[in-house]
Length: 420
Image (cartoon, rainbow, N blue to C red; front, side, top):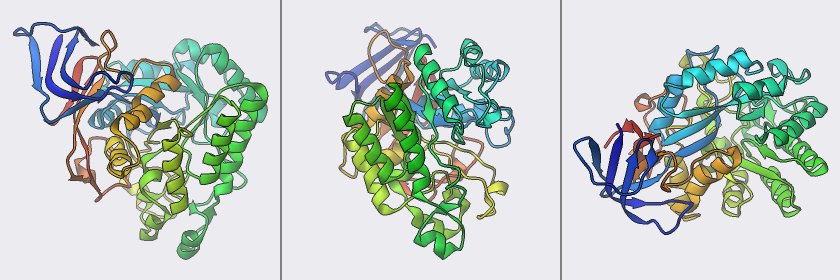
C-alpha cells in the first residue's frame, strides 16, 4: 500500500496544536502533503474518529528468545498494534538475555516482519547477574537502543555508573529497575493486604531505596537516567525533588498503577501480581498527580506475558501482567474521562515524551515523518481476555469497562490493525 487517505478526521498532534481536523495523507510510508487520490489510494472515512501519533511503549517483555509459549516478537507486535502501539522497547530478560550481539541481532532480524518497530535493550551485566559487565560497544554495534538489566536491578553500583557513562557517550538511555533486593522478594505490597492473605509482603521501601540510588548516581556524576515502572508516592516525591534540582532524570509509570490498588489481590488471582506490586490508594493518587505535574514523563505498560498454567498458582506464579492492548484505553479512562488531563496531554505521555526519551522519531503527525498513527473512538467496552490479540491473556483489566478504543493502527504507512 503506497498511498492512504484518512478523510474528515479529528486530529490530536502533541507536537503541533494547529492541526485539529481535516484529511491525513500518507505516501510511501510517511505523512505526506496533500495529493489527488487515484485507484491505488486506500481511502478511510475518519468521521467520528480521532487520529493520533502511534504510541511508544518504553517497557515491554517480548519473551523472545527462550519463552515463546508466552509471547514472541511477532505475537507481541500484534498485541501492540491492537493497542495503537507502533514502537516498543523490548526488555533484556529473555533466555538468553540480550547480553550478546547475537541475541540482539536475532530479535532485530525477526522484528523486520513485525507489526511494530522493536527497539532492543542491551543487558548491562551478563545474564542479568549484576556483577559482570557486558561489552556495551559490541551491543551498540549490533543495534541496541537502550541499556538496562530490567527484571532485576544492577547489583554492582560501579557497573551501573559505567553503563550510565557509556550510554551518555553513545546517545542512548539507561532505564533503571529500581529495587533493593535485600528488602524485596515478597508477593504483594507489604501491609494490610499481605497480612490478610498471609503471604510475604514487598515493602515500598524496596523500590524507594533503589530509586534513591539511581537519582544519587545521576546527580553526583551528572548523567541521565530513566526510572522504570514508578509505583510509590515516595519515589515520585524523590523524582520531583531531583528534577527541581536539575537532575537529568525521567520516569514512567504503568496504567495498572493508575487504575488499580493492592485490594485487587484479595481475589487471590495472580493476574494482579506484578513487580512492583499494586500499591495503596494514596500511591495510586500520587502517580496521577506526578503525571499531571510532569514529575513522571511517560506511561509504559511493563507488558509481561505468562501462560495460564503459570498464573494458576497465586503464591508461586511469576510476577507480571500484559498491557499493550489496553494501555491507551485504561489511561484514557482514568486520566481523561476522570478529568485529570486532556487527550493531548495524555498523548504527550504515551507518544511524544517516549520518543524524546528513546531518541527516536514519533509523537507527531507532521509531514515528512514516518507514518505511525492510530485512530481511536470514544466508546465503552469491556475487556475480555479471550478477545485480546497477544499469546497470553493475563490482564489485570479483565472485566473492566473502559471508555476509549483503538480502531485502526498504521505502522510505517501500513495498516497493521483494523477494526473499523
